[in-house]
Length: 191
Image (cartoon, rainbow, N blue to C red; front, side, top):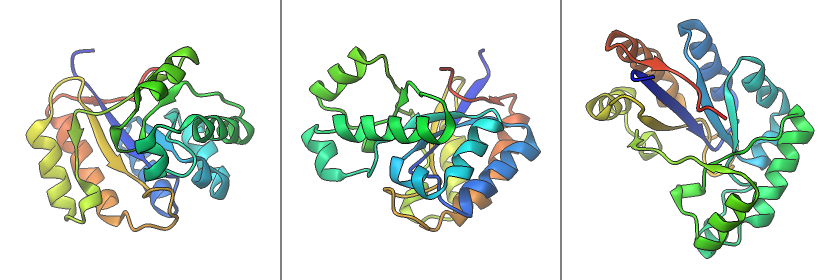
């Protein structure tokens, strides 16, 4: 649709933030997509299942979000392991994949294509990982928003658990309300 936008959250699940994000999405009638790290799924299986139960999309974001494996392109095992963990945890095999830092070597892309994964990047980086305020996060997104924008947000960080995402959580209600006010509908990325 011409007024759809796509909120996406990377690196989780990560409690309590993922559950707080899910509560906000539910309250405001918004959908999102979560690109989960396998390691985090293992720590928070109930939260992972809740993502799907509440109608959001779940994607693969590698097992450990390793900078070395990402930039050398040796992600096959990381991708496979995360797919296995997600399927074991939820019963769902996802075909959505977001490479860490948006980097996918040619051989990683070939592997993903051969295995029917959709590579999902973004066109708006909220920079919520940079330590700014909730207002900074919201302003960054709203300055660049267009129909069909894919917005990069984070509920975790590099598969490190309990990373503080309170500013993302604080930004979310006002951001969603402003998007709705501008006529946008927050949806999950279609599978």
